[in-house]
Image (cartoon, rainbow, N blue to C red; front, side, top):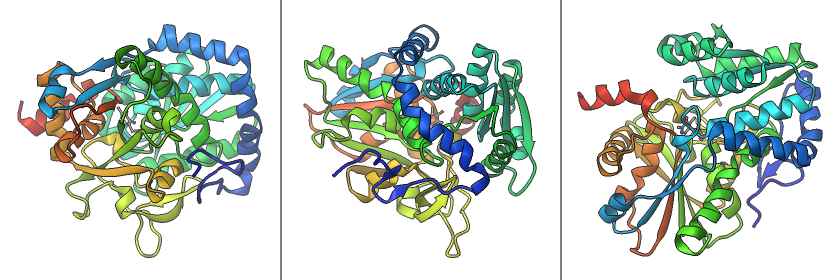
Length: 393
Ligand SMILES: *Cc1c(COP(=O)(O)O)cnc(C)c1O
């Protein structure tokens, strides 16, 4: 079984490019060039240099001793929380801004929900001195004031999406409309392994530095480069794709994907896409999608803004249906408790998204000699208000 993308842009039956005809030239230009550009030695050199000196890579692979003692297994944390801007998203935006420059683009657009991807995009645009327009739902702008301020400080223009539910979906529609109207000079930076081919593959490749590092770092720690398990939370699926990438074809490495169950999988307030989703098309790709009987996208819910997405990337839809990855759903409460636990046991305050991955240890028993790597996708500074409210701190 092949778990990576095929020549046609599909992971099994998922993926592809289901886009309006007007968008075809933009997406096709990217499809024809992305691998060629990524394989240029000068691209690799510049990407690696920025990951090292700007992002701060390699991020440590940290053996969590007290957490390991508690759960009687060997737990390593891949510290994406220590990256510049506080999460893995910067790996992708650095890659895409370099891609945009190589394609001669002078203007960047992006969509953002909670604002994390908007901030990561605004950051690399400031770094390169390129104009940046971020579309964001009007409701999200009101909910996420600190990230809106960050984007403005970084020189981006934040444009409110005022149609529909005034959230991520509507911001995406606005960004697509912009791209159709500005096909020559503009690149659209998508923030996860979602969207039409080649985006899921391109983003997975930029994030694959995570598993590349895990391999040599684990070799240093344990004398072998393959863990027994890799655990990652899944919103769209980019931190998981990066953490899995170099292990996809090695079935001795077990993959665990963690989705947000919100108030409970069947509570009507969740984002557990694999369990609740059916095949459908969102953001230009065929994937598993939470939808009503007549195909309307269901509004997702999670306490963590980054997991609050009604679909998953096509790679993850394929990992789910093929059984290659085990999918586990974690509720708001379970995630919050696991997050606080990490603070007390290891002195690390995780993003609430990452806390979902940590909650797996309460649900699943590992053997004492298992080597379990957890993708600690981000840090919790951005979530302080939510932690304060939840625990009455
Ligand atoms: C955005 C985000 C996620 C979810 O996005 P993926 O594409 O699924 O990785 C997870 N963790 C953090 C810290 C995030 O900011």
